[in-house]
Length: 173
Image (cartoon, rainbow, N blue to C red; front, side):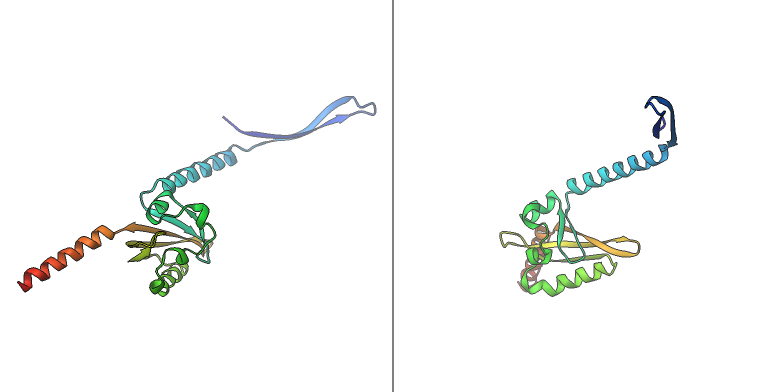
């Protein structure tokens, strides 16, 4: 099928009677296909973002939250209505790790992907050990926003510490 846009006007005589039509028709099939593909890509991305088991936030160039997914809400206890427009680091970074978090943001904003592990704070104050991945969103060679992704490693960290303690206890016995 084809998409056509038609622009026209009616020609009238001195008495107002229609005596003709004048106009143009343009094939816009390719433009419509491109628009449909953009919508399809946007929908696929939104489904990935919204349904990801990984906690994801989209930040602006000042570290303010634009968007979070459901996994972020589940992990940190915040909902989009209470965090949109707020500084991410002010919400989830323990005070003693503020410089570290700023460094991660700065590195990512400079166009580098960051992949670190550290502690972050839930809304209820609980500390959790997470993998932190920062990915710059680059448009026309300029970072315009950042995706921050978080994977809860608390149980793994706890198991590692228990294993180390058990090993030390066995060696000292």
